[in-house]
Length: 112
Image (cartoon, rainbow, N blue to C red; front, side, top):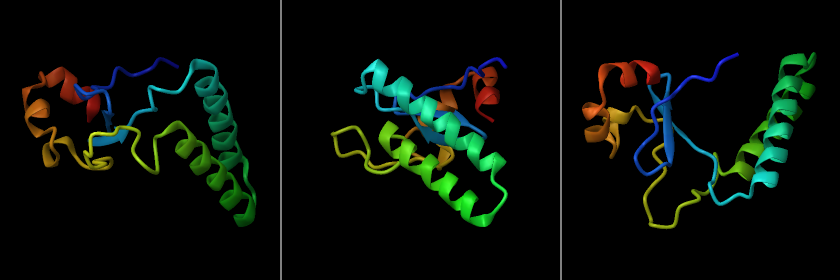
């Protein structure tokens, strides 16, 4: 599977997919910590798909959420300049509206 080249905000905090801002992994994480967390995330996501009961599904989703917090993609923001978390917003409805409008059509399409 090829990785899609999603547009990333100039400050490196978000990428755009499916028309929404998604928080990127905390860049301060060292490579081995990040790799181990991503491995656990993939295992947890697989467990969600394989779950056969509501209890198993809830547990697997909780594991996904815990790892996403560890990676900095959920929970408290990893930047320290006081900027709010704008994850989940369409870029045109965020502080990134001017950046989004200035992107070429191909880049916006990759984030659609």
